[in-house]
Amino acid sequence: MFSTGSNLWLMIWPASWETIYMVSIATVVTTLLGVPLGVVLVVTRQGHIMANKLVNRLVGLPVNFIRAIPFPIFILFVIPITRVLTGTSIGPNGVIVPLSLAAIVFMARLAETAMLEVPYGVIEAAISAGANRRQIIWHVLLPEAGSGLILSVTILVVTLIGYSAMAGLVGGGGLGDLAVRYGYYRYRADVMWVCVIILSFVVQALQNFGEALARKYNRR
Image 1 (tube, rainbow, N blue to C red):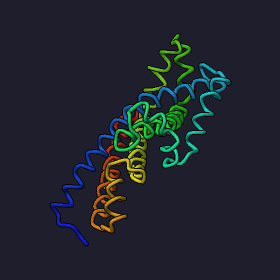
Image 2 (image 1 turned 180 degrees about the horizontal axis):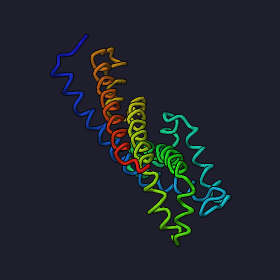
Image 3 (image 1 turned 45 degrees about the vertical axis):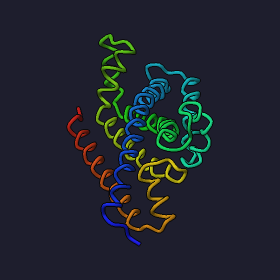
């Protein structure tokens, strides 16, 4: 049975704001922690400005371990941490913690890839000019990788939207939760289709915006 338009949107709007809330906070947390982690992975590589094989491995191993865990399982895996930090393991607040933790390592690898595209000759030129390590990171590495980092954040946000939808399987709130509880379990095709259309539209809009911003910022 299909619901009336008014009743449908009374469910869609709160779920949409829950998704925006989860994804926005997780994006900020993930970017603030994931990009520095990516910097560590880059500068400690062999032949780079702070080459340290031990540090690179100590950072890289947990990053690879967490990335290998499917997100629905990861949510269950970090429930004790989530409860300590938020007091709950369900709803939007209960999803932000696993959402951020899972995405931090993803962002770290994306940022690493973006920064590895910076020609090392540019860094060598900065070293020849007398720049120290901090100056190289802040004034050479990150700015030169700016376009790639913007695309990385765009991919991150799109991924977080997908993760937040999967969190609906465990009562995480948002459009994914609405699609599962009211769309799938209650055989409400209208709810499922509207959730899918909204998510698809938002993802496409964010992708287009991110690509346009990256082209504008590209310094090469």
